[in-house]
Image: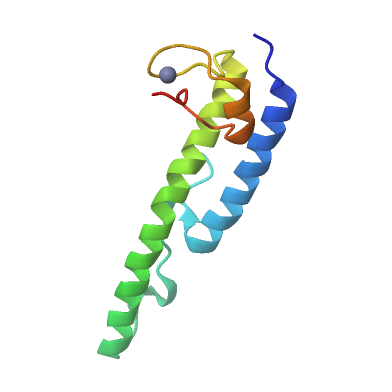
Length: 116
Ligand SMILES: [Zn+2]
């Protein structure tokens, strides 16, 4: 098996940068060591206006809904990069079979082969 690792790694790094941009837009990183994002509370909840607080809650939930899939995707990308370093990249997490190159080129952070 000879995957075009350099190309796949470039794709993953590009995806990582894009996801970081989006994640930073919606939330903020817990700390530099962590890959967890949290939703920033703008204004610190100092609003006296009740209606404004209600709007803030809705916005908060919407942002969590946006953040979660992005965070999952980001984790997949990080794991894929780790696997490249560990030499276990391109192996299905369920069956241990090789994931077809075609699938990896379309989705470099895929964890499983198409039929899993
Ligand atoms: Zn599989």
